[in-house]
Length: 174
Image 1 (cartoon, rainbow, N blue to C red):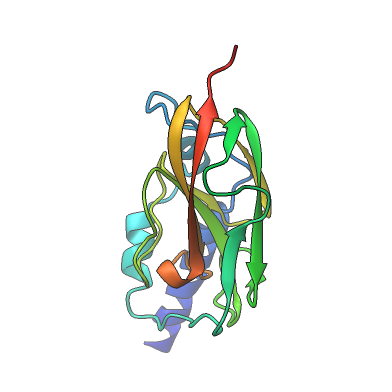
Image 2 (image 1 turned 90 degrees about the vertical axis):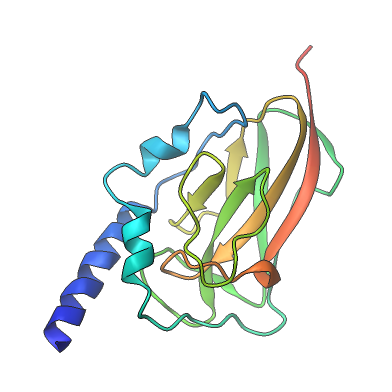
């Protein structure tokens, strides 16, 4: 049984490392799906099933994540750079469960992912499993909510306590 668990953990780690793609350009336009291309070759539903028996790692008390260069209500032009900030917790690439660490996700026009749930991989949920601290986003003109969601090494959300949501208004290009 121990051997089977180690084999499963090894396979899960390989799958998760393949999810640690680079920066993504995203748009709220559903016809563009760059994130799907970066997540080819693995199934997040299988990851969710695979981590079901593993104990989640608890975030440190008083840890927080935040948008380092954007403010709630800010008017911006697209594309724009987003810098991710943390306090009280360290950024580490996906694939290992290390206490006091995790990685970022940006969720567009949706709220935080519930505590312990694997963050989906789709056009609205952008993964930064490589430990990235910034990205460039492309959004359609209009108002958009951005949620910065921190998750453990297995992409399990630390919940609302380690998320930050702001609203930005994207100006139309002249």
